[in-house]
Image 1 (cartoon, helix red, strand yellow):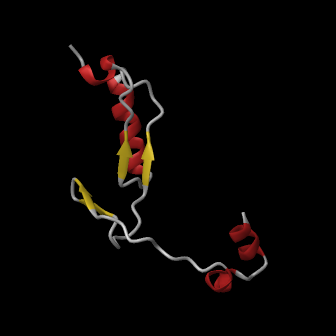
Image 2 (cartoon, one colour):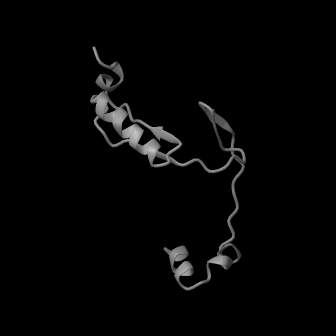
Length: 87
């Protein structure tokens, strides 16, 4: 919200001088071909909000998120039925 205000008022070019941003040192991990942490660029990620027992709907949502620019999609498997797949 403060950043939005600075953009509107024309102060955005000085935002890092007003609010210095420092990145913490993190452990790097690879998810598929995507490097995360340890100085890698920020990864755009999202999480599905579908009932994961509905495989077709969950896959469709993953495809929508990828089409919108998400590089990583997280899926919660919160019930044994969700992880069992179709039978």
